[in-house]
Image 1 (cartoon, rainbow, N blue to C red):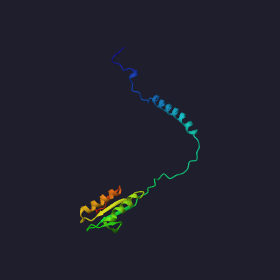
Image 2: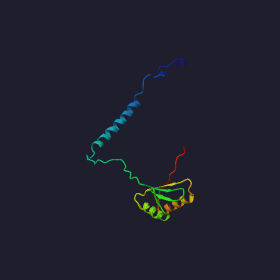
Image 3: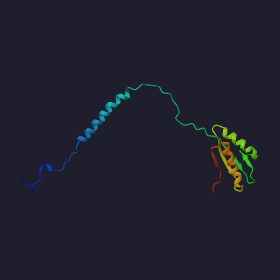
Length: 136
């Protein structure tokens, strides 16, 4: 027993160990052997054709404008304060409910716009938006 000599077993192995690769391939082969007959024994059915695109029914938009002197315009038609609530109730009763876009003049008192918003809320309008002009 010599301590200074090199054994033949200490050499670096130059070949790839094929055993783990063969094990993985056998497992995959077994999986495919089991799943392929299951897919072949399915029932043949002639399925109907249908479009998978969602059909969107866009609600119409109701425009309520308030000009500088506080007058209301419902879809560009001038109305009185008394006509505002019935028209908003009629719009809220539609199916699908239209969106309400409020356009207020920048010189109008905020009170007039707030009254229009309160009337819309009491009428049952759920979607209210404000129209503004972008800054340039």
